[in-house]
Image (cartoon, rainbow, N blue to C red; front, side, top):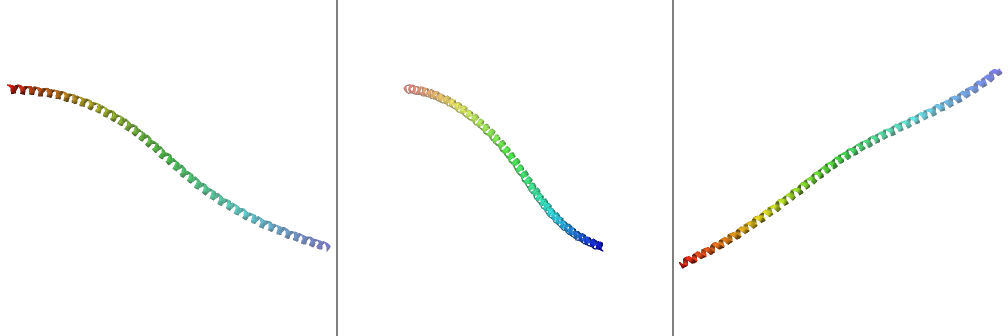
Length: 148
């Protein structure tokens, strides 16, 4: 009988310990579940942050691509402008050469005209001399006719 009582007491102690272990296990499960939920929330937040980062990176890449395209276009426009300036400089050089040629031609024409004018003056002077001689001869003839 004492053994039965001792066994009953031991059994009651074991049941109590079993209840405590089950309670501790239950608390551990609850804590593990809470930890899993917290970890899942953290992972979801990390995924969302990663998605935002990827989106930000994609936007940044797009902006960089646009900036590079714009820079290439600006470089091309600058090249076209340099080519236009070079062409304009060649046109100015050609215009200066043409102006120098025109000045040389004009100077030659002025020189030739001056020479012709001098010749015409000389011929005019000679003609005036011949006319004066002819008038004098005519007067002499008139005088001779009037005395005759």
